[in-house]
Image (cartoon, rainbow, N blue to C red; front, side, top):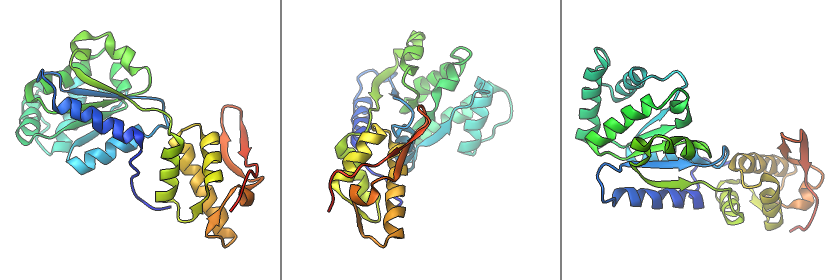
Amino acid sequence: MKNQFVKTSNYERFITGLSVLENRGASEASLLLVDGDAGFGKSKTVDYWAVQNGALYLRAKTQWTPSYFMSELADLLKVDSTGRTKTIFGRVAARLGGQEIPLVIDEVDHCLRNGADVLETVRDISDLTEIPVILVGMERVQTKIARHKQISSRIAKVVEFQPASLDDIALTCHQLAEVTITNDLIEEIHRQSRGLMRQVMNAIAVCENTAKLNGLKQISTIEMAGKVLTHDWQERRPRAVKAVGGR
């Protein structure tokens, strides 16, 4: 499988959300919230964007406190992480604001397990520096953050990641697969995966392996008939392919 990033419709939604953030009227509304179910490609999308734009990417931890968060942030910025939290905050804010470094915090749900103290610190940073801050969480994170008005009021836009469309999956197959996956098999991947990009990626790998084992440059539901394409962990059974077309 080719190693490249595919710009699906969720990526386009994310970029549109960023444009809203960049053109906001209230300078303090510098937060962008990204939510959606696991497997929709949120982390991969924001990580790709962070690398391309020189943003700082952190994955939240359940053990985070404001001081723990600040120390980790300081270490990533390569600034002195010793001393009182207030002192570390000043160094971090100066570096982020001075160099206009965007901040991405993934799995932000962990910051809300015991109140919102960590997100209050994030809010303080964004208020002072006015840098873009992207918060990434699961589907219900929006409801959790809404309980904290001082934070939710600073969200310029919410981007909701959705299941991959048939067009998204076709684009992914065409750009990543090292063999040609025919339209009928792409439709089967879409049906079985239910739009979960993790399942899509696994299915592409299965198709590639099957094609290579059989010396094929193109593969369809005919060649994949009876073979396991994805696995339904909830029903604890594999999903086999039924031949519905061919080359």
